[in-house]
Length: 115
Image (cartoon, rainbow, N blue to C red):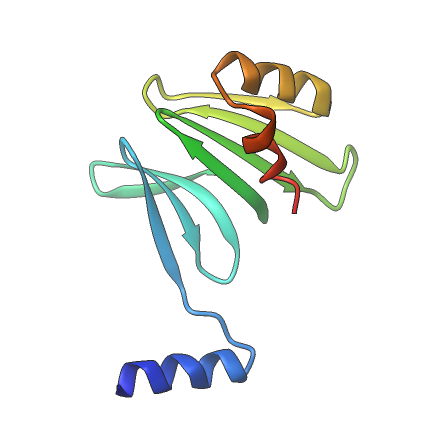
């Protein structure tokens, strides 16, 4: 009950709790005041996608990431293959969506990325 009360107090104060979501194969979504995708190898964490991640979607060994950057080109899109340790970056949304569909993401799933 104390933990629930403390969590509610933080929420009311406008503070957010830090947390991590395991994406598999050493990759994680980190929320430490800033949202980013990290990869941990031999106990050492490094940011794979730096800066504020707006949204992400995981399906099997693939993670789709949308990021809004303050500088041009603005939105950046990523397809991360956590099984093969491969990261593709896109600035054109159409190219990103085409790649995501090749990896089995449906239109309904892709709509979840657009908040």
